[in-house]
Image (cartoon, rainbow, N blue to C red; front, top):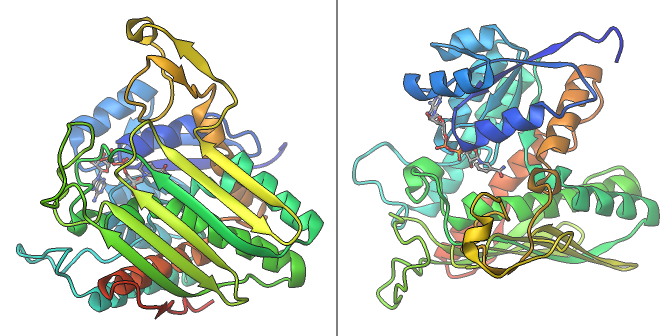
Length: 396
Ligand SMILES: NC(=O)c1ccc[n+]([C@@H]2O[C@H](COP(=O)([O-])OP(=O)(O)OC[C@H]3O[C@@H](n4cnc5c(N)ncnc54)[C@H](O)[C@@H]3O)[C@@H](O)[C@H]2O)c1
């Protein structure tokens, strides 16, 4: 790394994602990184965030962008486009959190995600994708899509297996589920651009799209792309048949809390992705890959790298066990280093290496654009109770 210039990182947002980005940046070893500061809309929170980490709190987005090389977009999905376009216009690299972008309504007070015309949502989301891609084309900066599943060690090991065995993927199934998101804005379509499919399903979905990209690249140098989708959604916790026992979050405004997406690829293979807010017992994040020469189960979280038995809740009060677990008593798949298994530090390492030496990005704007195209085509399909819908092209 001798002689390499230092890349200056700026964080936009001072919430949950900004905190784990900052933590992951401390573990980047393939490039020199200096975190210059943070900007978020709440002055009080950005100052507290900056103070705790010994970085500068910037009073405006423009000032932050002017002072860094890489802008981390760690804000609610409805704000990603404006922040990314501003950073790219100033020729900065961007690391954009999931979901890339979407359709967040027309700004009217009576907007409702449940009654929204999903064709309008698909068109709106693809327009937003187009504006970000156009900004990237005009910029000297590059977009890295922060889909941490792509960089999770389990997924990267499967990448190596696919590349070295020349496997043909026949079918994948995967899931991201838990008992409900913590974020305040989550649950309102106008902020999150959708429900379980958009908020959770994008993780295993992007990982599945990535696997077909890897397969195509290994077999003939060309990514195998998604072409069609069928989907179903349900809003269980806000339905009149749901009996609330007090364990699941129920305060969703106008989104689905269950989604199933069946994606068909151009070579005829397919993937089934589940995403829900209805699963107790901690996060349930996995992708299974069934190929013509092997089968792999990538257990992102939980996994059995460590199992603990705690006979008394109180004993583990100061011990972090695993994401979203309801109780610390009894047996648990306690994670010895959750961020490592989840891929956060590997993601930052890959991105900064790519920005520093020009090596390729494994999770780029194409993967991000394809993910949004599948998500919103899925919402159109779900609105028609599962009718197959063509996935729009993303210009790549
Ligand atoms: N990859 C993952 O595992 C993962 C996990 C959680 C969240 N996320 C993603 O990270 C993003 C942020 O989620 P979060 O959980 O950190 O939310 P959060 O509510 O904890 O934090 C959001 C932050 O953005 C700030 N903000 C809002 N609008 C802004 C604007 N226009 N300009 C600047 N700052 C603004 C808020 O003040 C707050 O500091 C979302 O896109 C979410 O989907 C990803």
